[in-house]
Every structure is written in structure tokens, then in C-alpha cells.
Length: 124
Image 1 (cartoon, rainbow, N blue to C red):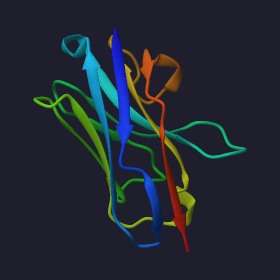
Image 2 (image 1 turned 180 degrees about the vertical axis):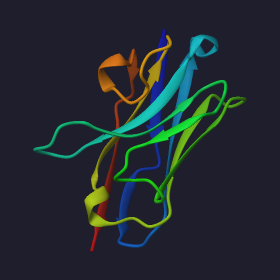
Image 3 (image 1 turned 120 degrees about the horizontal axis):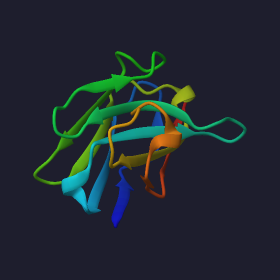
């Protein structure tokens, strides 16, 4: 069983920096990859970024390239998402997800486990 717990969300202003975290407990030895997705009211869940857990290869949505950085600390079983220049369009609930088998890391439907999500709200 895998349990994912996010933290670090909150309120910010345009231009602020923010880092959110996701701790992965349970079957961490079998994790193939982890990703971040976001969703705001009225919109579908959107892929943000993902990382291959062992190799470290990263993937980003075109809309966030250059502004978000995904990273992981394998010793701490923790996934991070850093944004150094928030804008109001980044307002959403950010959720981390874990994928146990070799499948597409950019497709939400492929993921096996999800966290509860953390709210990020950015004002102009």
C-alpha cells in the first residue's frame, strides 16, 4: 500500500516563490515514477510535471516549462515541486501521484495512487 501526503500549499502573490512537497510512504521500493497534477474549479485535471523515480528523468507540461521544477529526494521518499514566479493562473489544487509500473508518466489515468491535494492560491 502507498500513502501520499502533500504539504506546502497556501496563499501567495504574483511573483512569489513556492515549494510543495509530497511524502511517499509504503511500497516506495516499487515506485516507477511520480508526478504532479493540478485542478481548479470548472477545469479538468491537468498534468504539471513528473519524474522517473530511479533515473530522475523529468517531464513538464508546455504551459509550465521554465517556471516549475520537479525534484525528488529518494532517501526521504519525498517529491517536490518548486515555482519561482507564481502567477494567478497557477491557482489550483495540486496533487501528487505515484505510478508503480512502467507506463506513461504524463497521463493521470495511468497512476496508481493519489494524495489528497494541497491548495495553492495566487493573487495578482
